[in-house]
Image (cartoon, rainbow over all chains, first blue to last red; front, side, top):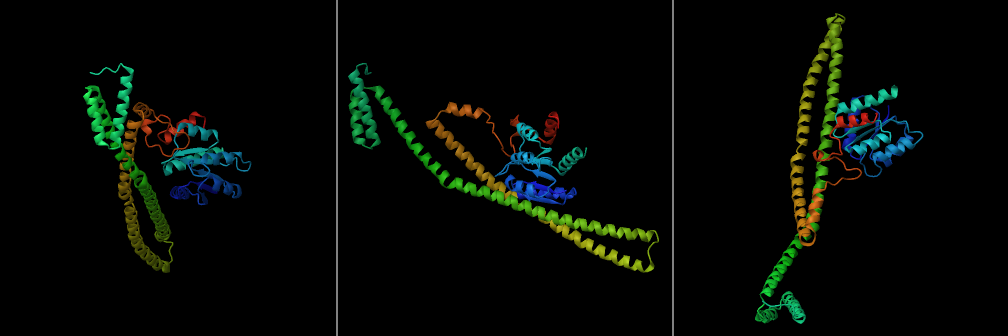
Length: 124
Length: 249
């Protein structure tokens, strides 16, 4: 399972990578916004995308929409991990086809739970 | 009391008042005094009231001028200084976060090794219990246990020292706290100056109205710090989950 972690803050990328490693996902790569993430996704055989929303350059919501609009990427599971907490934003992300939505600050248990849920849906 | 009903008389008084103001503004005290005497000679009490008002306006104009220089200070040095201070906060917090994560990763690695070593030893220890150990292997096992215990002691000391480093990395909170407090004071000063300007030149009604309105920010806004005053945001993961499941997710 190859996972791309997208966040503009290196500390947050590091936290997520560490948590993913503890959950057994050791094959992770990083990008700092949508503009760097999208070409990586298109070129790199990723299986899963974890992205922040608020980033300079291309925002996470636009990355999500770009992924869903790309024939090769559109089925990729996307988990949003963000401080954006307006109800209309969560609805917007859901309508854009997000698979999970975690608000910061979050816990390791929440990340684990959301990942499990996404995998259950994919398998089932 | 003078009657200003006569048109000519009214115009004359207006001209005289303008002249008086102009003398005052140009610091022509003698001319002003002369004009005041002339007007006073006409026995006009109202005019003295007007002069009183003019003097007050002049005083306020001078006060505003002083405030302008405070605003100049704020714009020229205090705001750039505040930007530097806030950048310092970003640097310090990032540094602390990385230092802490370095140490945590190192501790994790060490504790994994300790656990693996102990697991290996336990396998052989159980063999000893089950009498599956060759006579020569017992000596080897004793040596291994001795090495393990020594290593364990060193690892525990190292863990202790790394945890101490994690503790010390939290000193950023005190430093950044002080810096942020200074910036809050500055923001407060700017707010006061702005309110003062609005009082002088703008409309306090508009200000009070805007103050009561809750501004709704469009688009991304980062962490919401006044959740209790907002009804358009969720307060935690549970509410996110509820919202999503109500949408059929």
